[in-house]
Length: 231
Image (cartoon, rainbow, N blue to C red):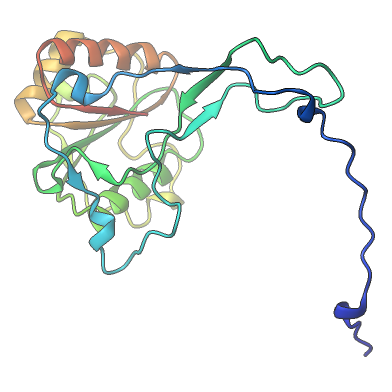
């Protein structure tokens, strides 16, 4: 078998064309679409070092954490052969991801996971990974599943979840937590969240979930309940 000595091999590459961006003295201004933050409502909220820094089984790599200055541009593809839009602003959004500082003490977190509306592939896998991540990576001990969609918040007892219980959920179809359409009663849901002490809610569904989550978020914000909403 013959081997090629790549140290003596010449690789042909395409000669880069002149960078058209050199014709512009500056990029367009960045228009950052701001998002509400917990500290907007609770300015004295204490922050904590991310538990991943002290996890014996996981060590964050360089660049793992996302900073507040990391953004995603709405338009990221441009044709350098055409006129570059210098004067028009570029819309940008905050980049999602793990932060160096968190605002929830894992020992005080009561997380609720609910599947609502229509079904989509992978719901059980998402639930399983969330439970394992919260427990093994962040040290959260109180994790609950809300049964049968939104109405499960106020009509059924939440189901305690742990890695042992969900270990094979990724092999099962549908959603083990069950789901239904409808049942969205804003006052009953928010009252149940407050009564049960849930301070982190994770919603997974198809349909009008964003509108429902926003309505929950605004109502919870008015009552000053410290809560994280996700989907």
